[in-house]
Image (cartoon, rainbow, N blue to C red):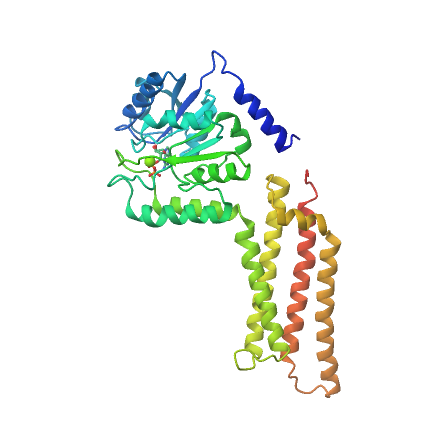
Length: 396
Ligand SMILES: Nc1nc2c(ncn2[C@@H]2O[C@H](COP(=O)(O)OP(=O)(O)O)[C@@H](O)[C@H]2O)c(=O)[nH]1
Ligand SMILES: [Mg+2]
């Protein structure tokens, strides 16, 4: 397997090679779902910019099974039209990318919100060494171009959350005007079919440590009807972010619950007064609940990490360190020790009960603690096996 280093060198050599005479420099790819009132202007302005700038290029319209006349209009305006029957922004782009022949791909919507005169700036950034370039609309939104709840809630929240989880450094992660070197697409391995494709591109690029560039662009009001559904598409983005970050979805919340639960149990059992009073069985039950659920959530997160690492080529320093240090037997031993401790606690209660002539029992605290230890121990024991099963067919 090539290391990152050799990949970079190949890449630099490729950069310096002159384009072959028959090679196109730019493929402008435009996804299109029922945009008959815009598509003609989009295609002709893209073509005009390529011609004016002397850029060897093509314009591809990825028609997403439009019910209107978009495809015919695009073809007549001089675009190469590819058809993608499966609806969705990502599906349309994947079909367009597959058909693209240029060294660079420039992406923009078919709705006149983006200015095709910006194409040379995107190309220049790629020429200067960027692998991917993304516009930033946020400071130059023309009146009526973006509804206020997208401007002030949806976009900042989703971009902020995306950067909190993945630290991409991209300010407007949903901007639809972007450019990418076609030869990095195999590394990006894009798969999503809907609007979350925009997030996927940025996150995958950051994970692959590609060179990203961004600059401010203008955002104009749309011609025709928007295809975006705020809640459905917002949720698809959010869901994508969460399922690609087991640390934030499972490990962090799980660990917090488990630690708080264990502390609460400790405070109750040791009769440590806290906040000026003693805590009893109700706090203990809450602590047990948190400890049990927290352990379960952490175990799910570790398994999710294993799946990501073994089957999706993900890299996570924390998980890599864990798997280098611990083996199945460590998990089994830890689970076993906790189970044993719980069983001993249970035995103490039984012996106490026998000594008191099988009378009434009032060892609730110890009973809850023993049950918690046994449950957590069993969870760890069997989760360790599951983790081991996930790694049976791993490739690295
Ligand atoms: N939402 C959506 N857009 C599609 C689809 N197929 C192609 N598109 C195109 O993707 C672009 C983005 O859609 P748009 O309504 O402009 O969303 P917005 O830019 O996020 O507000 C437009 O050019 C659409 O025509 C699809 O199935 N769903
Ligand atoms: Mg748009």
